[in-house]
Length: 163
Image 1 (cartoon, rainbow, N blue to C red):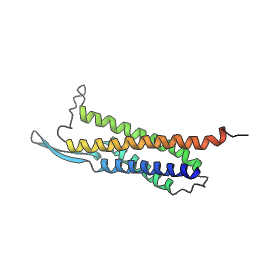
Image 2: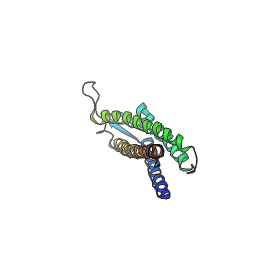
Image 3: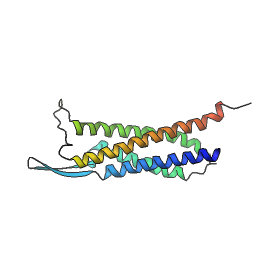
Image 4: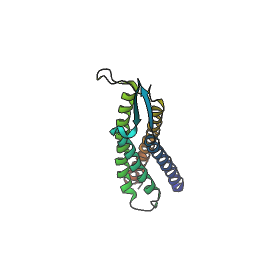
């Protein structure tokens, strides 16, 4: 039973690692040049601080995911992993929230501020951003599930001891 739980956790952590690495790579490779009324402009992720934050946060969580994969199952550091799962789940959540807000403005614009939507001029760029956000959401969901499982595994022996 313990090996099955460990295998499921390992599989979930591998999927979460894949999602965060994919999100970082897809966002980091998003760029496109366009002409709009004889004015040339380039859309890149690095032009937007929220997208930079998204890439950096996903890269940090990816490194954490790799390190946790090599942690022995008997190690006492798993208690620290519970706390770090909380921190990194919140980091992913905040980064995807910021990136999603900027992506929404890029897609819909903001008529009150006079910002025009850009996805009509740079559809490949917007497609890359959309793909990165989807991968990021999958990563957040997987890390939230891992967090719930880590909390359950850590607290279950403390609260449900059978006498």
